Amino acid sequence: MELSQPSRECLVRSTVLTDIADDLVRKKCLPCEGGVAPLRDEQIGPLLNGLPGWQRDGAKICKDFRFKDHYQAQAFVNAVAWISHREDHHPVTVVGYNTVRVEYWTHAIGGLSENDFICAAKVDALFEL
Image 1 (cartoon, one colour):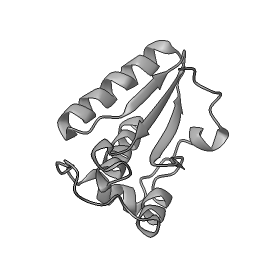
Image 2: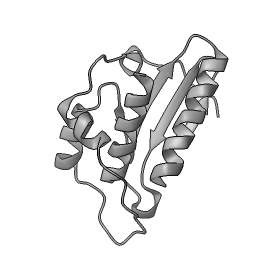
Image 3: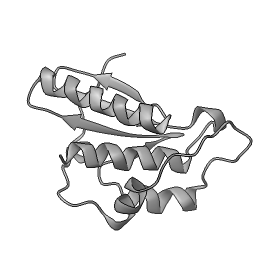
Image 4: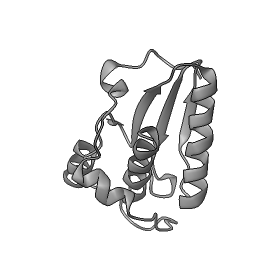
């Protein structure tokens, strides 16, 4: 899988967590084994607006991160893996030389759940460190 050139919108580095992101960062992912409906568009919109740079791509959300070099990109992926392990909610990551694309969706329901936004907010908070 080849990583396309990240769009400028995805590479924005915010300096402050939004109120929505701050609320999401404090939450813990809940187990999801299916049987619940994915979030509706009217639920997704406000959550996505609270996570600068994240974009909806069909049934998933994604963001591209840019780094100084490959070492920093790999270190970021390892930190994302730590978050994923703690939350038991795992993204798809695509690594380039100095870029990382992170994609979330909830496989068990075939769409987006609050868990996706919780993890996205935690990844953003990690990027701000």
